[in-house]
Structure formats: structure tokens, C-alpha cells
Amino acid sequence: MMALQQDRNLAPAIVVEDLVVAYERHPAVHHLSGSFPAGGLTALVGPNGGGKSTLLKALAGVQPISSGRLDLDGLRRRDIAYLPQHAEIDRSIPLSVLDLVSVGFLPRAGLFGGISRAMRAEAQRALQLVGLGGFENRLIDGMSIGQFQRALFARVLVQDARMILLDEPFAAIDAATTNDLVALMLRWHEEGRSVILVSHDVELVRRACPETLLLAREPVAWGRTQEVLTPQLLAQARRRSEAWDESAGACELSVERHVHP
Image (cartoon, rainbow, N blue to C red; front, side, top):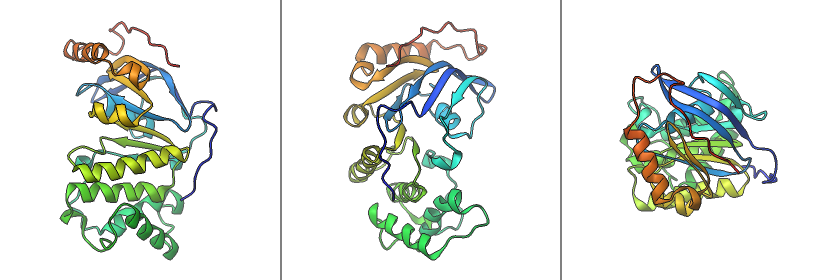
């Protein structure tokens, strides 16, 4: 895997300006403006239904935006590794663990390019790195949630992407697996890759993520984690979520603007 040596003071990797994203015809993200820095590690935190996963899908290019601007600063889709919530992935497909990891090569190899022996060997090394050596031929439907999540991280490893988007990757897994995968996420950050993490685990975010966007469909706060994840701002996010009118149109809510450093 290559190490990306990036200057953390370079222009942001992603800039959003007055961004609105709808999900199932309801506005899920309202008037978001700010930037995700190149080589940064940013958490998306907020109440259920607050638009975090929808925003991540928009950044990954799998959810269209309704209005506003989304600037990827030259990143191509192959430069972005998107890991959805494990519950969204169909595990009934008779796929081996090695084949699952090898899917990560498709952006490089192309849909009809085939997976080379060298790529297979790289996939095996990735499985070793996530603690799944010897699991290559096991079917994914026989894995525990923690084992499956390790395999998904191995798939991200072989993608070798500049931008990594993780949607609740530590949900419903044991402490040992969480520690191992958090360490891998921090390694990506140290290599200079841009990482954006959706998480409900506020304490984990406080420990691991320098920057946080607190989102309750509209931005509540965005900046240094210790300044964003305060009891007052978390309570404000809950109140905004509880008061949200599901029938509101995309531009009917006045937005309190935030300042992003």
C-alpha cells in the first residue's frame, strides 16, 4: 500500500457550499457549507436521521445532490473508497472472503480487467493485516459481524484510495475488533489520506478524530472536536432533530450559519 505524503496545509480535499441533499424526496442535509481538509480525519456526529449517512453517500457519489456545490478538488471516483454500513451489504451471495476483498481492485482493474495473481497476493496480505489470515476461502455469510467488518477494511486497504469514507464501521462489533480497526483508520490518517467517519460513539470520536461536523440535518457546529462535542451543542442537535418538520420543504428552515476553520 502506498503512503500518501501530503501537506496538511494544502487546499481542502472537499468543499461544500450551500449543499442540500434529499433522501426519498425528503431533505436530509440542509444548506451545508464548509470544507474537509486534505489528509484530515473528520467525524460526522449527530442524532439518528440527522443526515450523516446521506451526506457520506453524496460525497461518495452514490446519492445525488439537490442543490448547492460539491467540489472534490480533482478527486476521481476511483480515488474514493466508500464503506457503507454492514447491514446494507447482501451477505447471502455465495462469495468467498478473498473474492470480497478482491472487489476493491475493480476501480484499478476495471469491470472486465480481471484480478491478477499479484492482486490476489496483495488481497491475502491485506487479510493478514486485519487479522484474517487463513480466512481466504471462507464464505462471507458464515462470518461474525466483527470478522465481516475486518474483511471490509481489507477491501478498503487494497483500494489504496486517497479519500476514505466510513459509515458506522465500529457499530455492533467487539472491543478488540474496534481497537484494531480504529488503529488502521489512524494509520490511514497518518499516511496522509483523507478520512471521513460517521459514528454514534462520541467518546471514540473524542479520542480519535481531530475534527467533527455535528449534523442535525442542518449544521450545528463544525470544527475542532473538543469545541464541537460539548454537552450544550449535543443537546442543541437533539432539540433540532426532535423539532424537525418532516413535511418541510428543502428551503423552509432558517439555518444558523457556522464558521469552519
